[in-house]
Length: 403
Ligand SMILES: *Cc1c(COP(=O)(O)O)cnc(C)c1O
Image (tube, rainbow, N blue to C red; front, side, top):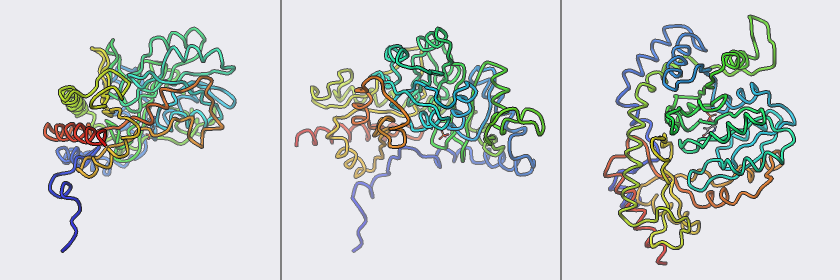
């Protein structure tokens, strides 16, 4: 007799955190045609496809300029350099983000100054930023992140930036398609906005890619030079840049996928709304952050106030820290994939512990890193999968809390 794994996994389809093959299947012909066009066109780095994609992004976001580059990480690096951030400078960013946010600051020889997040949005807390500014000697930029596709509150940050004469750079790597309450697009609300096309992002390439959005023509042309070693005219390099051009192949693929993005975002919105409804019907806690007072201690994400719109890059619940690993194992057993973004604050990462600093304590970051659990929230999660995910979580948490 052969062992065929756990019964749940072999009898039910697994629900993945992300299903890129499923996403691409209905547009396979369009993708192959676009790829063929590039193969036959003979222009492979920057060029026509990249320019066309940049224009389409300008139209989609309302930014005035889009400068394609090699990755979201490079977009951050280039934007910070264009903001004149250099050795010995300081940049404020949240302690709760993907590594690249602070990595880009440190790469330029500057120090990330970590500030805590708001518990509901998991985004940078503007009041704490205000308090931290006075602690900084060489502050050159503010770098808020639209975490999980949910737009960060920006108004007080841009006001503060204007008051002290430093730019706000928006790390919108996870948030293309999100809108704030004035319908301004993620990535267009600071002096520059950085977007990633890493394959797992809402608009993903089949490789690496990124873009910087800006409304300032001078900044845009400086960024265009910086992505090509700082070249301003043929064989004339006015400052030290990097090699970070967007590939024509990636641009061609991204153009096909950009046309589907509104539909995919609407599908993500539906998945998130279903989870909200299912958890609420099951009596899972919705607003009290003291997870121990609820019968079913699940805290699902608070929604931004309408008409602001999240891009739902992740649907992230909170569960009691001592249950999280056990719950994940149970969900894996039931064929449900989950993710922990992020298990550590950036201030706790060994690579950054000496390069960054935290003038104030980071209790919300530290609580979030111990509680968060991201659920499958992509366009392929159908109604029955949503029910299975929510029901399994509620049942397993009840069972685990009873022990
Ligand atoms: C993905 C991501 C990046 C980096 O983008 P890459 O394209 O992977 O280099 C930067 N910041 C955040 C918040 C991200 O999620």
